[in-house]
Picture 1 (spheres, rainbow, N blue to C red):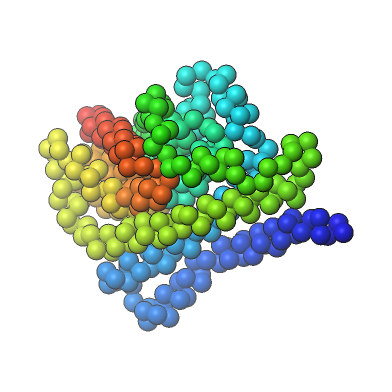
Picture 2 (picture 1 turned 30 degrees about the vertical axis):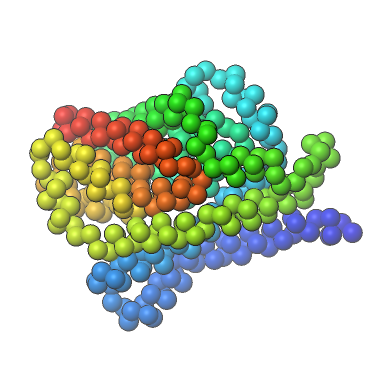
Amino acid sequence: MNKLKNKNIIIAIAALAAWIMVYSNLNSLINFAIRAITGGKSNSQWILSITFFAFEVPKVLLLLVLIIFIVGIIRSYFSPEKTRKLLEGKSLFAGNIMASLLGIVTPFCSCSAVPLFLGFVETGIPLGVTFSFLIAAPMINEVAVILLFGLFGFKTALLYVSTGLLIAISAGWIIGKLKLERYVEDWVYKMQAGGLNLDEGKITFNDRVEKGYTAVKEIVGKVWLYVIVGIAVGAGVHGYVPENFMVSIMGKSAWWSVPVSVLIGVPLYSNAAGIIPIVQALLEKGASLGTSLAFMMSVIGLSLPETIILKKVLKLPLILIFVGVVAVGIMIVGFLFNLIY
């Protein structure tokens, strides 16, 4: 009888063990498959695109399932009303600051940060606060900081973190002040009242695990196709956009080099580790530091694949406002670095 009562927990433990096994061996499995299919070749454009797609799709989907499952369990402890009351007692910027700091310590790229963003919105956390997390999570991370520290010293690394944090906090605050909740898709808010309606005093951990299953089924079922399409767009650009073209634009000293680099970076998709080799090559070939950093920020913090995924959650006016506010912040950072260096 106890085994039946704890069925959800037992299944979750087995599934977690399988998840860890698959995720820890993902790179080896995909490398083996790619080599078998391509005969070990890796220098053609279509192979680069296919390799990128093959690596990113299972990685992001695996993270999507795990994160949503965990968030689903956590949500069972906090009703939307409790969460709202908790945040109502904070000062104006406190929620944005807390979400941005949380984003710094979570090593997610823009697409895999979306699940937590969804969880925050569904839990009732203010929209502006959730955007602070969504911006900070991919943009400010240890890889980018270590790269900047190694190449340019502590001052540059600190300035990058400070400006990135400022973008996340201020952009989230602006979006929150604009009261744009009406541009969130209706199904997201309906899920706040959906799922298991359990008595807080009688709910067991087995019930909370079932909450996690329900969240995975409902959310992943709605966004998985958008994830695949978004990554496919990034894979195509990743393999076919020539580096020399980008250097010719970003190496210019004209004022428009920063906004142009942001426009070029937005259609791309990568995490910081993936974009760092490109940024290093750009810097070595004469691109300015501010322009290169603006490009890097736009790739990892404001990507077209990310907006495609968000389109399932947000309506077009909110997506455009989000992109516009963050793009302006990134350009300010780029101009600032070009001015200082």
